[in-house]
Length: 133
Image (cartoon, rainbow, N blue to C red; front, side):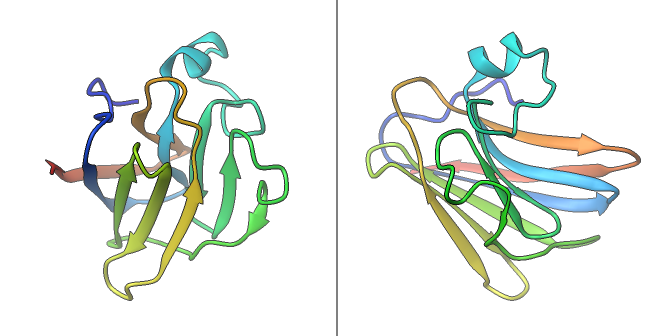
């Protein structure tokens, strides 16, 4: 989980390049909930995060009808995933740079949100940029 909070105003964008992949989820989360769970199992309902998994599954904090469903796009080694968050408009959007495929979720904005990446097994990513508007 990143140290810098998603700002309350404007749009934040950050990009994650996949260097090595075993299992990876990319998204945003509530630091307090994730920490209270010891950073384990924080991708399920009530887990405090909004993520897409490398195989296209969507996992989120509060939308049972979308959780664990194949709704997003797949990504793999060398892909660049751009994450856009707008607290005022209450959404997070993931875009695969190479194909422009995208997926959007509405988000709970009642607490501070932070960018996060879940890495399992031999996985490695690089955060390419973080820009605020």
